[in-house]
Length: 283
Ligand SMILES: [Zn+2]
Image 1 (cartoon, rainbow, N blue to C red):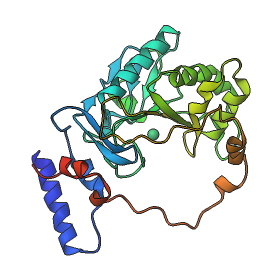
Image 2: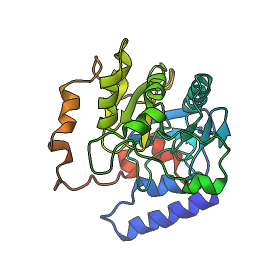
Image 3: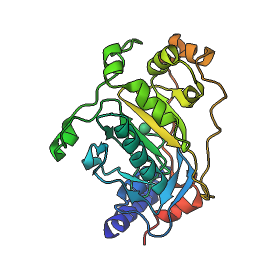
């Protein structure tokens, strides 16, 4: 933990010289090179929390390959690792060629410098729409292979052939049907395509939440695992399939209009639960 301690001392020193500017929590969590010891616990919320006792998803397993190894974000709550393995095995049994898995969390979760606002408590995973190729990717390929969007750039139009070829509807239905899954964030164009195509049982569509981005990957969020008492769940999505006015709103100007609002300030350690602060205190 010397690297972490040095980093923390450096960051705290910085804070002392600039009393008004508190260093972002992401600096502390980004410097934590290894999970904390002890039992696994998701602490706080998905966008304001951290992760104790993380485990690391293997780089490969039956039905999945993990991408971008250099980012070092394969850490997660054991429930999330089990979910990824379970989903990959299930899809493989259904004939899917394999999942490409993106970011999970940092070794101690927490806010990340750049990129995600959530993925903090070890219960969020990004999965590419692009299926895995038939071969095992080399490390260099995992860094450079590009994800492929399901939405035409700068439009609200589906890449319909890709949507079909990637077996997107099956992948998302199978993902949503796992009881551990609370929400799946997808681009509104992807949600609309599923709303139009789904027949029969439609309740699973309610877990698919339209959101900005998410045209190259979908984002799975698990509910707090049973017995994880420090974990804070988001309110469940509203009942129904969500193929309604709330979806139609995404196809108006409003969500895409430029905003003058300042981006939210990065989270400071003081914004996180006390157990999270303790997780990155020098040791
Ligand atoms: Zn994500």
